[in-house]
Length: 600
Image 1 (cartoon, rainbow, N blue to C red):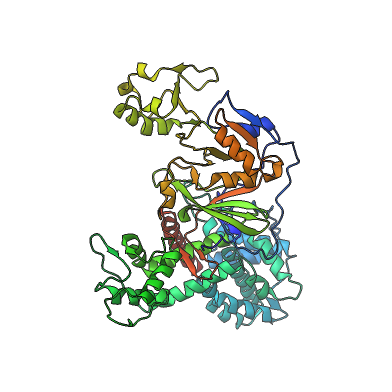
Image 2: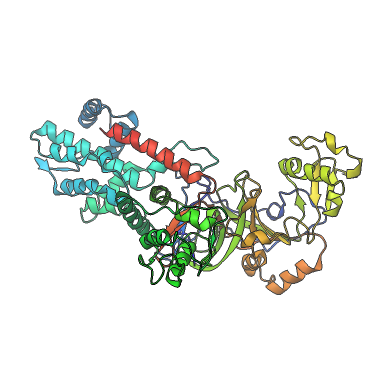
């Protein structure tokens, strides 16, 4: 079974969790447009409680995305103080950027202005332990060159008060960089397109370093090492990254030649089987030597292929088709890049979703339901195509609408519906669509046969299209809504065959759920009068839409994670379907090179 995303989970990396409005009518409002026939049922109004912190060690991990955390007001050293003047001299000598100089000043202002790394007339023992920690930064997927531990060790051996002050300030500079890097500053510093994600604001490095400097046991290096994620998923990602870097240094793994119409089934003979064995011996326990004919696709190798398929979200049938072979041929360097991006996402996590939440991992095509810290259900979903991507969102569930109508977004009406009408003039009638002369509440329904569709603009569609409830409705039998600026939601679908495919990026941005009625049952269980029998009866009865407000508005989050540790502690990979990880990886490498250059 695939892992539950670790509970630091990846969000609308810029959106705070949206609490439901107190206005019942607003909660019930359908963003698809007015629906005069809808039946609206709202639960009794209850106070909106803030999210409850999850248990200290929840039974499931949960993957996350950065959420903006405003830094506190920054205090700085008085400009005429001796320390401020010494800092100015150090900043000029080291060519410090103003922002870095200000962070050092803020740290000392918060910490009382006294030395941290010097005891009497020599560097402290904690300074030596912290230098060792910085030198070992590669153990947590950071570049030690950023912190110049060799230069710090050299400075620590220089005599004189001026040298001690340079050492003190250089240590603080390095420690602040390390604190920031461990807590998500690398991802937060990137200038990413909003369609990828809105990065979190930089962490409060001076405040975090002040806390470490005042650790109860005086163990500054231990407090620094405790910053950032410490969960099993993060540790597993670090261990896998280390193992894959070792593989890369040894030359990676074998590349399997691809052929037209590849489909290798268990028991067949194929001269590429020795290469497949060599490839899977590295990652999936395949025996390097065949029990019989080396070209035979034997049972031992089938088991290794199935393990590989499970780890990559492919149907574990042992059949090596093009998707399986292409996944095997992803280079170790590509997998290293995925791991590095996943690690930086985990560092930048800020979201507290509470003990119960819904989470959709877009590139995995999975929805998971966590209740009181325990994964209770997961199901397949269809997400947005590469042309119409599903956005990253963190919000709260608000409304369940049974027998929904579908008001077609203007863009989809022009791009998708108009061409279908041109091919088939009866398309709208056959599929239950009504057309109105505008978007006002009193807009009039018009006869589509009176429209000259050859003149209708596909970029500025002038009408409103609404599909009636029913089995043919594109939203199926239920729509599940939450506040967001993208007008996306979860919904059923009448076209269910896509939900069984390995690749499920086919929607226009909304998320189609394999069993939305079961999800509706969970969301409405605290309403008191909406059990599964009533839900089934409501759906089967037909008629106008029925809109039900969710009494306990739990969090929902759309994330984008392509590498994580499964429940069996085996690494899981998924394709970077939107190219998001590739763009983040490029930006991280570019920014990393710049930061190392700045450090020297």
